[in-house]
Length: 266
Image 1 (cartoon, rainbow, N blue to C red):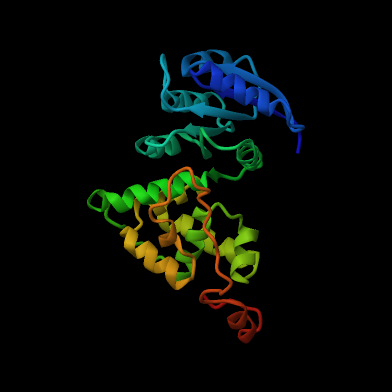
Image 2 (cartoon, one colour):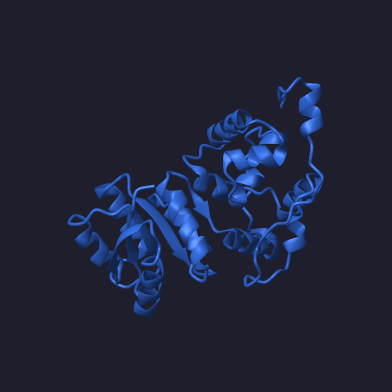
């Protein structure tokens, strides 16, 4: 990977300087720019070349949503990662529509920050696992506010793929988890994008959150495939947020592939 130019946009100087110091020790970082609000960022964007932007949401002068919209008009290929706090969920949909490619908690460790930057820089999306867990838990506590599900004839296998997408796994990692080929995962993922009308992986994750049918159905689905999302029901945001995988494999495992001569029928 070529060395990256990173732009930090946040109104908290101490946070900016701390993150800048940590990122400056990384070999892949070429230069780090700073802005204290969205307006300052937009005014300077024309004069600098940057690869990845770490964007706060709530800032004076111009917030992260408006700044992202303006930045994408100026530089459509810009990669923007949202810096989020718990409680910012109401802004996620707007940030995705604006063009954000990733979501990262502000209290994330430097290793996770590095992973998010590298994935987004390479054209992938990143969604902090802790954020997803927090959103799912909030939805469990507010079932009545959950939007109705859009029925797009998503198959059981596609739901399984969608679940792993929400965990932040790459297509190859999903293939390894489910004992199927990467090409099969590519096909299912393309079908999901087509059926849901999503433009990218981040939007697909948000589709899963907005249209999760009812959080209890997600629990039922995950338990059938032995991925215990229900086990993280009331875990605190400070916990790791990791979803442990049992040894057993769900429907469509290695035995099914072998019986089909390596082909996947679903």
